[in-house]
Length: 225
Ligand code: CA
Image (tube, rainbow, N blue to C red; front, side, top):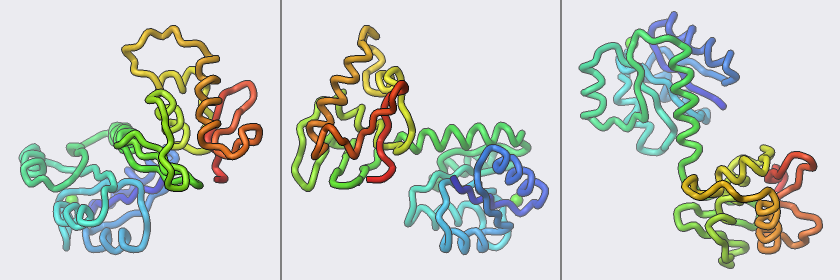
């Protein structure tokens, strides 16, 4: 995960970058809006931390420019409460804001939360011969629509969203079922669903290429499709 930190005050920018690095993120830094736009042009980022008051091109302008072409999550930094009103009033396209002064740990927590929210936003996944469309709850293989139950759709979508990540059966139950449903569903229910999903998407269910079994743990979506 790569984050662009845009802030003209050196100390704040450096501290934020250091905390983010410690939290496992890669960072790039820009000390003004112009540099930020330059870096955005040449690199791809997963999130932007953007100070509102910046030399050359201010934060709002950077935000608006970015929004013309990208949905990348943006957290604004702002020193005054009035600026927050302004930010929201202007509909700058920022996803969240943090008021200065802030604790770096709080900013990191907000960044993680925003990344989680964005991740769960419903984007189409194209992988191998499959197109998984969460908005329409539809799955296509080589342009043919496949029939999926909601639960099976949710299981496949959950796995495909994070290839390589191992999901225990419990975790899959959590993400696949509406939480209002009674939790009396057994592990083998998941196994039965996986079996049904494989029948629909795999050429050879004995040698699945999409959903892989991780013995003693659960399932994962292949990273090599
Ligand atoms: Ca500033």
